[in-house]
Image 1: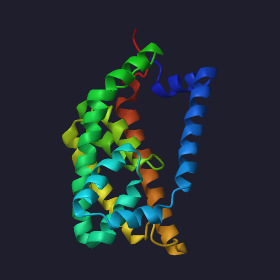
Image 2: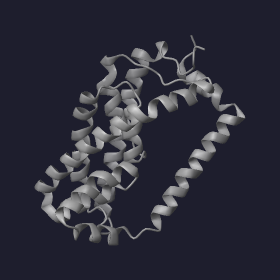
Image 3: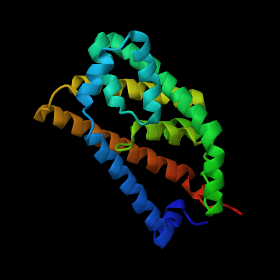
Amino acid sequence: MRSPLRQLTQRWRSRRFRVFALCALLVLGLLGWLATLVDWLAVRDHLVALDLRWLFLAMALLPLFGFPISVVYIVAGARFGMWWGGVLVAAVTTLHLFFSHAIGRWLLRKKIEHALERRGWRIPHLPRAADAEIAAFGALVPGVPYFIRNYLLALTDVRFVVYWLVCLPVYVGRSYLALMLGGLATAPTTRELVIGGTVEAVKLVVCALILRHLYRRYGRGVSVRSKS
């Protein structure tokens, strides 16, 4: 049986797959460029000034649709301080994970599976023993926006309780790191850039080790191609 990596490599050689990947990169680049046009400091100040009920609602709902989670972290710290801000982050993160899981699992998965099957692909299925590793990989992998990683994890077979238990401490820990490094409040110093870069490098190494372990243990029996 051919490995998923070899199948993916063969798919990359096809013109249609390369065009799709290029379009995806262009869309992500466009979204990144549009994000630079927003005055996030003004957004943060408006959120800090909101009534507590509206603030909680905004923090709970906006990140589900692509709003930068770093702004939520900074607002929580600015409004409530480090400790109570962390409690608030834990609360809204639980809501993000719950709604992302519900939307991804019950509204998006069937449509995505149908679209993949029409192109000869399918969502790979791994045993439940791998749930924690998959959730950790999804929560730690660098460069993927917060809301996208949550929806992608929701599309897998990872159980919600594992999804929540693994992702929640990772995200809350990341919120404290964002507050410690200043987030959107100040221009980063050399020390802060070194700390941030080191953390990202560690995350990348951990993700590589998890991916290596998953491939060695399950990869040879997992296919991304439809059997039909």
